[in-house]
Length: 223
Image (cartoon, rainbow, N blue to C red; front, side):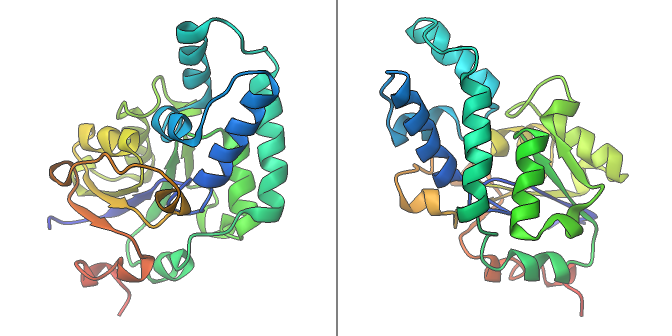
C-alpha cells in the first residue's frame, strides 16, 4: 500500500450503526403518507445519497406526492429515535484512539444528523473541527467533491488518503477522487437485506470487523 497520511471516515454505517434505523424510519414515514416502499427500495435509493436528492428522484418517478414537510418530519423523528437506539460501531473507538495519522469525517448526511450521531454515541470529542458534510460542496456522493474538500482542509494529498465507506455511492466518490478505499461491511444493515453491490475490483479491501482494521496496515497504529 502507498503512503497514507490521512484516514477519511464516512459516518453512517461506518462510525455509527445507523443505516438500518434510518431505513426503517423512511419506510414508516412513507407509509404514513400512503406511499408503500420496502427496505430494499430504501437501501437501493437512499444509502449513501443525500435525502433531498432521493426525495426529488422519487417525486419525478412516481408523481409529486411527497409533502413539502416530509423531509423535516423525517429528520426530526430520526434524530429523536437516535437518542434511544443509536450505537457507535463496535470497536471504532479503539481504532480512532490507536491511529497514528490524522483522521476526519466526510458524510453525505446533514450537519444536524452527523452532530446528533456523534453526540449520542460519544464520538464527538474525537472529531471536533474535523467534520465535513456535503452541505459544504456543490455535489454530494457519488461525486468526489466532499473527499477532495476534506483532503484539502486537512492538508493531505488525495493520493495519500484512505477512505472507509460502506455504500456504493461513497466508494464511487472516493475512487473518483483517486483515493484508496476500503469498504466496511459490518453495519447491521448488511444483516438485514442490504445488498453489497460493490465489486471487489472497485475497492482496495473489504472488511467487516473494526478489530481487523490494522491487519494490513500495522504502520498506521501507535506502537
